[in-house]
Length: 146
Image 1 (spheres, rainbow, N blue to C red):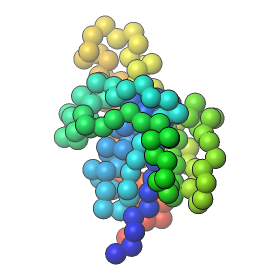
Image 2: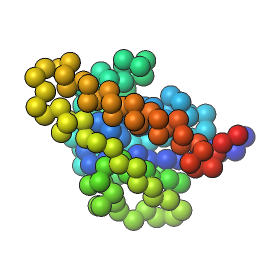
Image 3: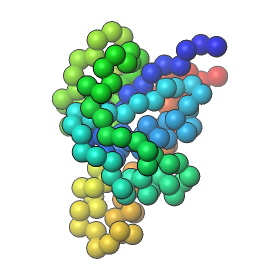
């Protein structure tokens, strides 16, 4: 069996988008891709991201917010930046890592004026579903399709 490529989802705070992407990738593509997530900073795991993922049966409640330093020693094949800030400040990765940018809207920013949790979750669900669509196409994008 061929070794799975290692892919890092990189965002600013590793609290929401990159965490959802890691969980979705592990769930849908775990047999073909080894997924990680990190941020340029640590902001902690966003509880509304956890809730939005739980709605589709994916538990990311055990994830930890990480920075690139926490993944030192992991030889990456791909880095997918999921926000503009991370893409703009993306460090140079040693070795063969290919950097891909696929930005998604920031759910906490979108939900800033939400009147309640349910209204806020609408934004998290939309972004979760957009990330899911991307993840479902990721093997093809990376040339890993059967």
